[in-house]
Length: 375
Image 1 (spheres, helix red, strand yellow):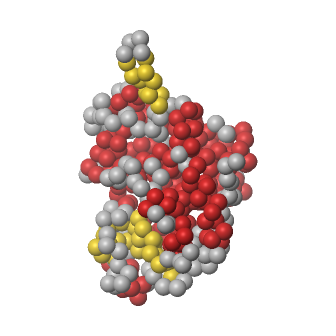
Image 2 (cartoon, one colour):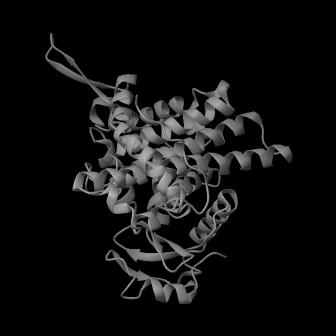
Image 3 (cartoon, one colour):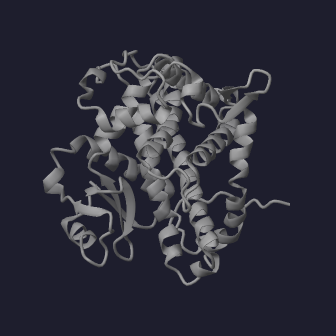
């Protein structure tokens, strides 16, 4: 079990280490019963990440009461802890199970169709998801025995893998190093460097979800326990889990134009780009699955809100189309919108080419994306 020891919990809560957003870190004895399901999931994810990335560090996790739902802390020389907010299990699983059971997406991931009792007609996408995240009092009506768990597991895996990448890729130590100020000489440069590290963590998290779930699929194949339709459902499910993780992040944030993080849609496009590269290499015949999953997710929210124009979120509609003749505006999802989002990441790719050699000195495991510079 990789839960942080009482000694580490004491250090995390010490005046010198305790993050401002942290209210309390629970010991194993305090939460082992109440959060047993979440603890088992986290233990499995982090164990898999440690093995697959060959990370040279002691990485544990702790359930905490905090204003920040996820964060990572460098406790001692080789000791790191991933801190997970105590509301994570209820809020994330409610969002995942609610979305995967909506008409328009449920068949794709092998979930039952469960009618939404609340009225969301005319609502923005984030109004809908925030209502689910913050105001689902009793999700029991969603927890049918036939509900697949891989969507939730993929979303949680993405979130945890993002934090894990900050450890394995040496981000924490790089930010405290003597060389870091060279890449943070102005406020804008500082923000660009931090956004670049977040982009790297998102890319790594996406790759980690792919690797862990494809390994699970391969294991099931060897045991001859997976029919072809289930294989596709699991793939669509882990892709959907990654997408939901981005929507979950947007639902929790108070700032949609952060300085130190890429915008939500740019982060989504980082994941899409990585998935497309992985599928192009490994499953070229299924290259359309990521976009098919996004369209199905869009249709599920359209069914709730009544029209695509109501949703106002770039994952489902990234462009506005102006009809000059009729003086009207409609929303759609197109390649141009994707190109614009990817173009906003170009300065981060330039910065990545500069800081990657420095990060190699601090890398504890995993692998880096290649440095690609614009000509």
